[in-house]
Each structure stands twice: as C-alpha cells, then as structure tokens.
Image (cartoon, rainbow, N blue to C red):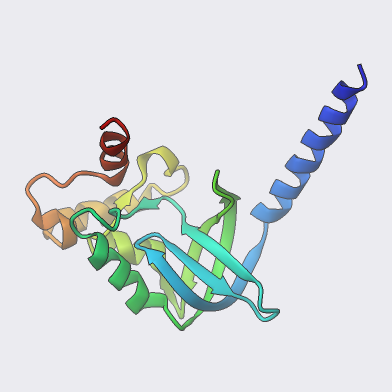
Length: 162
C-alpha cells in the first residue's frame, strides 16, 4: 500500500507546478505562428514556448479561412515582442494565455477580425469576447462572410468521425 502515498505526492507536485505555471508571464519574440490560435515565443534565455491563445478557436488550416487566420496572427505578432499572461496548460503541454503583441491583444483581435470564434468550452472569464464576436458577425468580417461557417470544434469532430 505504499503506492497511495506516492500517488498523493505526485498529484501534489503536479498541482503545485501547474499553479506556478498559471501565475506566470512569458515575454519574448514571436518566432513561429502555427495557425490562427497558436504561436511560439522565444524568451531572452533562448527558451521556446508554444502558446495557445486563450478562449478562442480559429479555423483549422484546411478549413475555409484557416490560412487567412494564420496570416492575420502572423501579421499581428510574428517577429514582434510579445507578452503572455499564462492561464493554464492544455492537454498537449502548450501554455494557454492572453497574448499582447506590441500593445494589441491578439486573442481579441482574432475574434474582432472574424478569424476566430469564442471557444465556448473555454470561455470562462471572457464574456466580453461575445460582444466582439457579435460585432464581427454583424459586420460580416472574415469567416462571417460565409452563410453557415462551421466552428473548428465541430469540424474536428466531424473529421474524427469519418
């Protein structure tokens, strides 16, 4: 029965480290943009951090507007100084947070441009983004030009079920 205390210690350590990660700010230069909601930052010690923009979900690269979303995030952040307020880590080990690229909140800009949805499953504390999304929708910006755009979470689910 010694595995139970070891499990408790490991769980305690994991929670401690995830709490530390969540209170963190990462600053550096954006060196890569994977898609419309993921980028990589290189900090001053040459450590790379893969960052997922919190509370938004951009179209997948193979979806309509996927490439435009990637280009928009690149135009906004690539090669620029960025600061990330880390909120959590996701199941892929990426940091999740609010990204400021030289004074622009990238999370909000992507929704405002109509190149990302508010991610309904992870929107806690981001209610203001729904007004931004409604404005993009009402003004038919980006993906809202389509009559019935498919949210990326539905697109991924349909692709898995094929």
